[in-house]
Length: 458
Image (cartoon, rainbow, N blue to C red; front, side, top):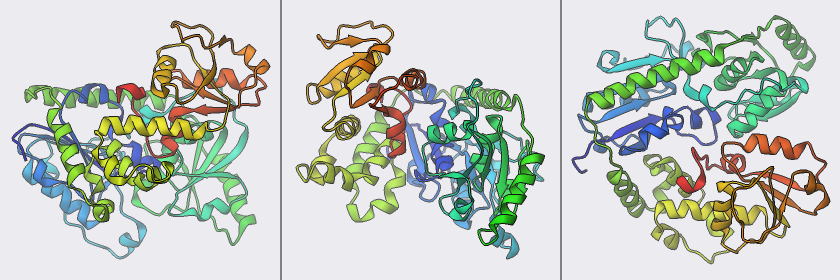
C-alpha cells in the first residue's frame, strides 16, 4: 500500500440485481469524484489493507445493516481503521427467517460514522432519513401513458410471482428497461425493494407481494402489501385487484428525493474539501493494473469485487470475450491490455457483434456519431447517418433525415447518443421502420457494462 489518500465506495456489487448494481452514489456524482483516487469494494470483500486513517469511505446505498453477520463485522472493521466514514442511504435489511430465529447481529458502532443516513423513514434508531440515490437514475416521461394495468417485476432470487397472469420481467434487467416497464404500467407488483421504490417515484401504484424482509417496513411513501400464492391464482388475482384499488399515486416525491440527495452530496463534498484532499487518480490506475496482474483465474469469483466496476465486468465476462474472438485472443493477451483500452475494445467488439451481417446506420449527427465512426475505424461500414441536423463532416457517408429512413434499407440503426438517446429512439419508433433499433448504452448495461458517461470519456 502506498501512502496516498483515497476515497472508497463500498456497497453490494451485484450486476444481476439492478438495485444493488446502481445504488452507489458514485454513479450519480461521478463528475466530482472522478478527480480523486477512487477505489470500489464489495461489502463482502473489503480490502482493508487499502483503507487508511485519513481516507474517506462512503458506504452505501442499499441494504447493508443487519443483513448478514459478516457485513456488520466488515462495517465495524472499516470504522476502526478510518476516521472519515460516511453512510449514504444505507438500509436495515433483516430477512424474515432471521427475524423469526431472533438472530443476534454484532451491533454496528453508529457513533463512529462521520455522517450517517439511512433509507428507512422514521426508523427506531432515529438515524437521519435519506431516500436511495437511485432516484437520479430514473427518467420520468410525464407524457407517457401506460399500456397495461399491472406489470410484475420479480426478484431474480425469488421468481415465484412471475407465474402471476400479468406481463413480467426480472430485477436483473437494466435500469432503463425497468424504468420503461414501470412507466408502461398503471401499477407494479413486485417483491423487489428498489422496484417498489421506483414505481412510487415514477407516479405509479406500487404493490409489494410476499414481503420477506424488514426493508419493506420503512418506506416514507408506503406501497400496498399483498400475500399471493401461485397455487391459488384466482385468489391471488383478486387480492392484487383489491390492492390496486387501495394503492396511492404519490406526486412530487421524485423531486424531493433528488433534492435530498443533492443536499447530502454537498455535505459530503464539504467534508472532502475540508480535509484538503488532493486531486489525483494516479494511484487508482496503479492499483487496478496491479490487481489485474496479480489475480489468478481460479480466484476471480471471490476477488473480483476489489476492482473498479468496469474492470470487474471485464473479468466476469472474460470467457465470453475469448469465445467472441473465437480463441484468436487469449486470456493472457487480454490481461496485457490497459484497462481503459480494454473497455473501449470490448465496446467496439460488442458493436461489431450485434451488427454482424447487417446493413447498419447511425442515428444522430453530433460528436457521438463522429466518435463511433472513429472507434469502428473502417471495420464496420456504416451505410448512412440519419439526423435532424449534423455538425460534422462524416467522410462522405450519406446523410438522411429521419423521415428518409423508411425509404432506405437498413437492417440495424445504432442510436448514437448518451444524453439524447431516448429522444432519438422515440423519433425512430414513430416511423414504420423494418430495421432493428439498437440503443447502445441500454444494451451495454443489459449485458453488464453500465457506463456513466460517453464511451470515449470512460
